[in-house]
Length: 147
Image 1 (tube, helix red, strand yellow):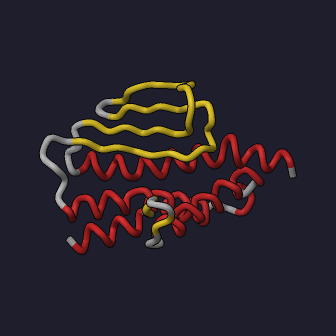
Image 2 (cartoon, one colour):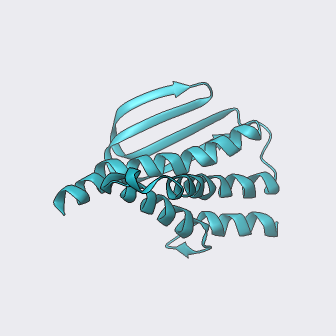
């Protein structure tokens, strides 16, 4: 049980959060984002790097969430913002579906954790809600569509 918990906190969750933020960034790059940032965790950086127009920072408290920022000189349109909001949950859903169709022999404990956590991120982030000023991707999607 402890090994499963540690695996979830230090491997599955950070990787799944990175995939989620990568979904937002890839969508923004399609809309010609000039610079994008992915941050996973909180605290001092363990790993920093740049791939093309994307800067990545992996920080010491891996399990403390993630966020991405996408910039360009001309502001994104409301439609583009809406689609960027969907990029994260959709990439989590793609990972979930890919793992869903894998043969049962490939479904080890770590793979099942990864499978379920990506399903969780896809579902929770697509739901529209706002808690203490934090808005879900689904909430931001609906806000962008209303404008």
